[in-house]
Length: 111
Image (tube, rainbow, N blue to C red; front, side, top):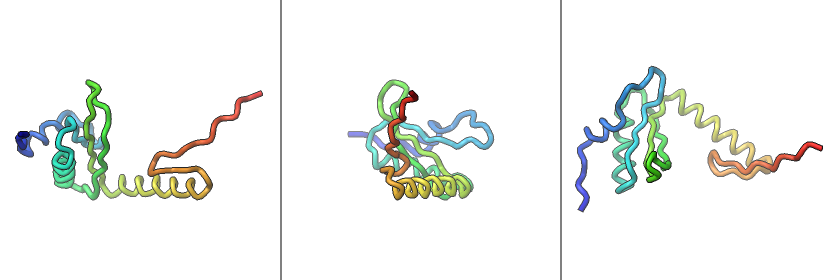
């Protein structure tokens, strides 16, 4: 049976020397996903000026999957909205997109 780690352990994993203006990340190994994502979201929303949280699963340094979350302030959220809006425009132009992932046409080789 898995034991629930206190939220302070989660906070320690995301802390470190973070340069001014950098996004604070919360990275943990992939285990009980719903608890981890929830912990990341709650912790990120407690940070000053956070209006949304972006979460994804990525390969970690050892090859194991990790959950990575970043809190977004209003300015970053506007940037995300602009990117999503642009991807919708491309989809309407005939380029198939799912979120940020778009199938680009093959390059034509130069003669």
